[in-house]
Length: 47
Image 1 (tube, helix red, strand yellow):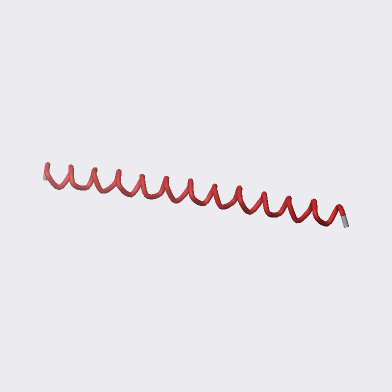
Image 2 (cartoon, helix red, strand yellow):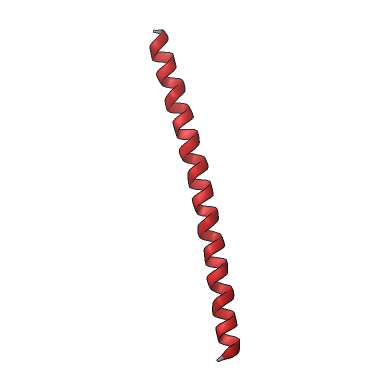
């Protein structure tokens, strides 16, 4: 019974770290999209 509660806590901790990774990854994607948009606007201004 004790080991069961430990494994439950571990899986909860694992899902939390996965969630934080997803948030970080989506933040990087949003930042990259914003950077591409800026470059596109810059190229549009030059051309």
